[in-house]
Length: 136
Image 1: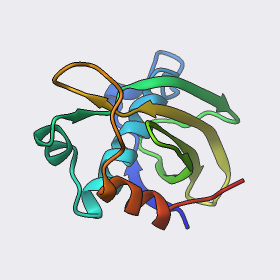
Image 2: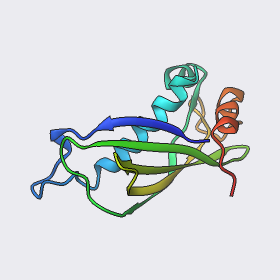
Image 3: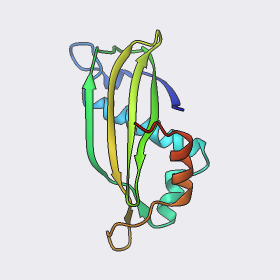
Image 4: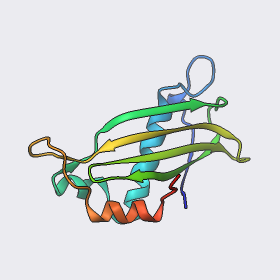
């Protein structure tokens, strides 16, 4: 199952060519990821209160076609895997007709904010990963 985050491109995201700037897609990924865990009752504020951070250790984006200002789009979010100390989240951005705009992934480490050492991924995040898992 995939989580679906709906949004519209903003004027501030558009470059001089009239397209959403390539750096903004990673922001769209982040907004969708944060919305997904928040909608499941495990907002990042709670994660941080528990003394855990999920820094990105790797990211990839593959662009298929551009998107312009004021276009509606959907970011589909899903877990590709979850291990003891890391997880991989996949993303696919589609336009209002379902046409693929961009796809990619982020890999996150689970780290203790106290000592910057790897730590176990909390159960609430594992539950979310189970719900939105697409094991390949």
